[in-house]
Length: 324
Image 1: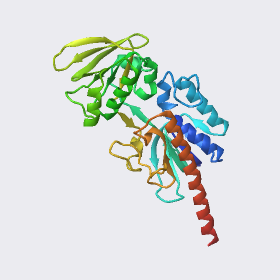
Image 2 (image 1 turned 135 degrees about the vertical axis):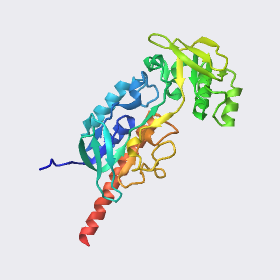
Image 3 (image 1 turned 45 degrees about the horizontal axis):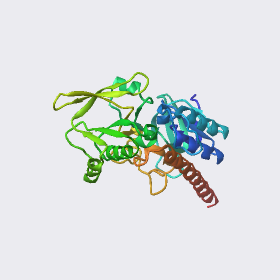
Image 4 (image 1 turned 60 degrees about the vertical axis):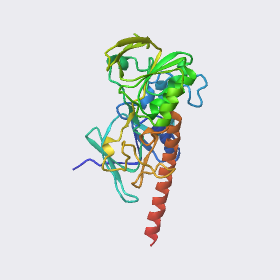
């Protein structure tokens, strides 16, 4: 005698703005969504001290509080929010098929639709001092947090297009930007390299790495070393931005869903549809361009609407088959 496997109409994998927005819309559409939060409930925003650019918060709000608000709103409409990690999936390839997901390597559930909002994880340098000061001046998003350092001296680590874009963005609002490139050349496009070179308040340092982020509660400076000359130098800064890339949290979906070369889930056109019917992707897990809370929330809404329309289509198809 085996236990009956739970059947879910809408399974949401991962929390954060995308997941909770999807949950709100799915619940209001009577899809009775069940969300598994993952090991970091609320996602990347839980490590952000101030969110100043999300509509509806005129005085700003800290990331963890915002995620609690979104969770409460989703639960108010009937979403079941469960703490747990989806560790394995088996997706159906046919329209109307049932998808299966394993929670914490033990319990399986079945779902008519799946919305994936597992996000992406920012890559960091791995320094103990850096990790200790995350949220205290260390950030992985200049567009999100740069405003708080207006008129101040900051530093950014990175060599690609994103780093170059964020360095020039910071240069427009900060007093001085020290840009650290760990090799002897940038990986950014020539156009972006020229833009950085022409920006007078960007101090570009090649072959330079951070040995330590200085400060007890907040960032006060960095200890740098030039790997080519061996010269060490301390500079005073109030903000440190890490722009060395993100890793989408899509490991368990390999072999099941189409991804690009970086591991981001591929969605069709302007929709959130993946290559498999009934499986949708929202937020940073499929967006490597914008990576903002508000854009993630928008795609969460889209995913719920796409899932609702999919279920309606499946129901109509099944009714026609019965009549025939």
